[in-house]
Image 1 (cartoon, one colour):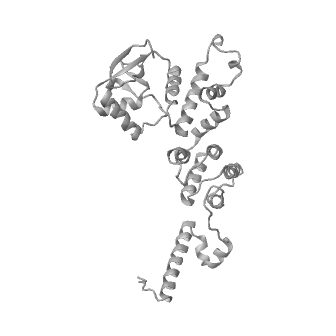
Image 2 (image 1 turned 135 degrees about the vertical axis):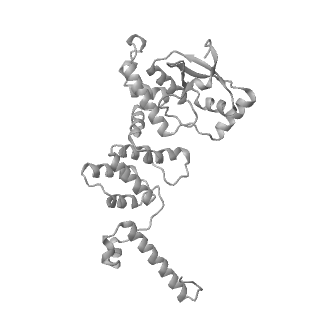
Image 3 (image 1 turned 180 degrees about the vertical axis):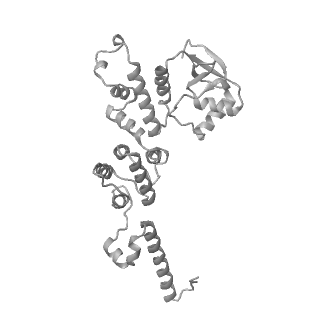
Length: 298
């Protein structure tokens, strides 16, 4: 940012970037940033652009702006740029994707915003290398950030997921020990489902405490195409043993149904589950009594 003028801008005049895809978490690194600013001042000015009504839009520096607000500063050192809407999006994405940790959801919406801006903006032919002219927009973005065009497209597909499903993908970065996570490939398959089917999958993931593998997600997508997707089928799929999950206890469904009262079989599956659990608990109590344990049947 050499030779660019740094101005002190009133913080109250700066708005967040519209549809900013990057989260501003008040985590340890944010606390360290705030402490550094308290002790040394803001060493790296934010980048903003002019809007109408004498206001500004943040391009790069949302975390620094929040830190300055919390410290109680009224003005912030800023570089003011004249940018079109499309160039502002490109600059915002480029600056934020340099961060050390990026969530899949952040990368997904950032890539989508940049791809749409690049397609809308275009580039003058004489500014492009002849080889670059042969590349698709996704390939150009991939070259900038060390991704293949296929991966760029996969990330962009994640923007079609409902938030409940996208959260499982983010958890692969937030907490690698989180038991309920989902890889990008199965998530991409689920992104082609209708919103209603996606919600059904999310509900069953929560109920079964298991996410689908890539192969299972492909089957789920095919079942929706064939109008055969329902909660019972999803139950069976998610209960299948997968290599990346703990071994699950399985039972013969016919044997279980034969042991249940016939009228119970017409009830909701969660009611049946509750009935079986309570029956097992009562059986355990009576076994304790047979052994002479002091147990209050209540």
